[in-house]
Length: 214
Image (cartoon, rainbow, N blue to C red):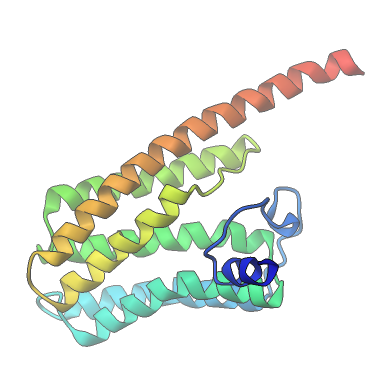
């Protein structure tokens, strides 16, 4: 059973337990790791994807779709490499969600421009990604880490999958996937906001208690 649980954790199927110590606030950034190199590559590939997609004329070109797919799959690859090599880092914990948000925003911009998906849904997705980035930045300024919840993890794949399929095929499936991802995304954002309020309140109580304990 222990071996089965180890395999599930290795492949990211079991996210129970605390975050690795190396990823927590106050730890060194450790930017030069194998998993982080994947994150940097994903980040550098986003403008290339945008160029290829907007130059395509209709948003449906194999090169742009394949590159978007590679950037999206990189989200899983860098986590897998971190678990395999043990090269966890604070930089990776900060970089990965930002690259995910930028990837979705870039794909949404392409789909909006060429009307590959319903614009109202893309607008909600875009607002959600911006709000999530803002919440993360607010948390960093307040010294609070917002933990990625299971809804947030689940929402990424149908949204990215919808964008990829919209650039590859025509039909109802990309729209259906986007709406599923949209519902999960909104629920995840509500959880992030609640977790952020709770963490900020805990931080305030801790600071207020410190003078009394000294």
